Amino acid sequence: MTGDEIRQRFLDYFEKNGHKVVHSSPLLPANDPTLLFTNAGMNQFKDVFLGLEKRDYKRAVSSQKCIRAGGKHNDLDEVGKTARHHTFFEMLGNFSFGDYFKEDAIRYAWEFLVDDLKLDRRRLWFSVFEGDDEVGPDDEARELWVRVGAPPERVLGFGRIDNFWQMGDTGPCGPCSEIHYYMGEDPDDPTKNTAELVNGPGDTTMEIWNLVFMQYNRTESEDGTYTLTPLPAPSVDTGMGLERITAVMQNVKTNYDTDLIRPLVEYAAALSEPSA
Ligand code: SER
Image (cartoon, rainbow, N blue to C red; front, side):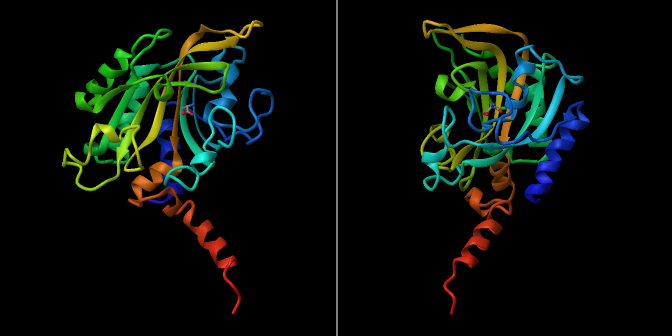
């Protein structure tokens, strides 16, 4: 399956499930002084999550062009060191604005990956927020993953860095739940396909999709302290790296080897060949 076909498949799956297909917004955010570049699919919906803007739909799906080269979500220092970072990428996302919440977000993600794309479920891992002083553990997400079919030992708890998402220092935020995929040999070998590789070293197991359960707005007061207040309605913001899921589907070791990026590398290589 080509990268273009995977993008279309994602849009079609969520459109079929009542989501409005929305175009990618520009890489330079129109009205948001807190961001230099668009860094996530949810940016263009920030005011909808906050209840400041109304749209004529409550569910949306997009493939958003993103740049993560500075600010809170900065991939620049990873480029050239990992198989999965490249600062510019496309984020496939489904969104609920006060409509469905955790249960359906998790069910849709499972169905899309396992039933539609037919990923090998032996290679899937899941993470949930384990809680801290500010926000409690997300036991509900853990139970929901098990209910859709994840083995309990494949659902792991992590802290704020991995499993609490916010766009910047302020704005809509919430606990998140990620899906990781083991790309190594023999998924049945428990010494190879291990929990330690989830959010661990190397690229063998990589995060492919992040489901954010948007529940709070973080604001900064004049004295520089930050406060969490509940959003008008619990919402959903997800993001799956198109180049990552394409690497999985095309069974290649790095995003650079997918049909989305490889032709660009080859073109640049041809241009830079010394003339005879
Ligand atoms: N906003 C979340 C992220 O960027 C999910 O899309 O990971």
